[in-house]
Length: 267
Figure 1: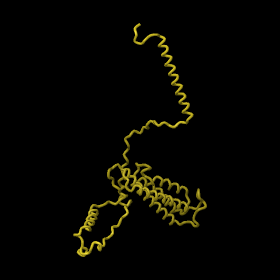
Figure 2 (figure 1 turned 60 degrees about the vertical axis):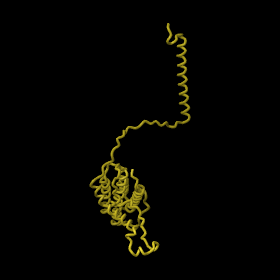
Figure 3 (figure 1 turned 180 degrees about the vertical axis):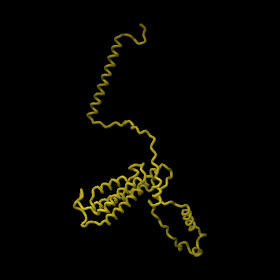
Figure 4 (figure 1 turned 45 degrees about the vertical axis):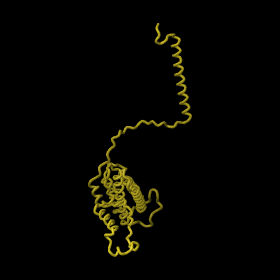
């Protein structure tokens, strides 16, 4: 399993998911509708972890669910505006004025954008880290070109070679030469672009290969801890069974000795 930037991306997905749920609550307080609130929660529950929910579904399915749910909500808010009424759980918290349609629609579009963003990051993250390839393509990072890499290496080598220094620098002592400090850049964990998203929507990722192992459950050989009283009863019954077997074997040996015949003897 590839582990590059896995923890950082999981933290980013969880933060976006928390923000989306908070915006759901804000939209519910602005226009209380339990049906809209629950439908958004159900869609976000599936689209927040798309590959964990069902690895056979493509990105189109989850984007279609988000579009279907939010299109209906946008249509309701555009026609009816803020619905007035008491909520199911909280009926004493709200706004002192009725929000306008523009405020509701702007909030709905922000929720739609954040849902798209959370879904694509979570989908591509799980797709990259569960890939069976040795070096899979990470579409969440920019493609590094060979020319830029060679140019950076050449410039760093040229700055260290005295042949590439100016004549004025050669005459000055080394302590007087002012060198530009190297900027320590923070590694980029996500560089999202529109072209990989469109490419993923056009060409869905192949489903995960099914395991060839048997699906039959293995026998449970682990002994469960039993109470002390039950263990005493089981040990007493086992001792009684062993005693009866010994008595039965002793009785059969006594009958054989009374017969007076020796095994293997004549007569």
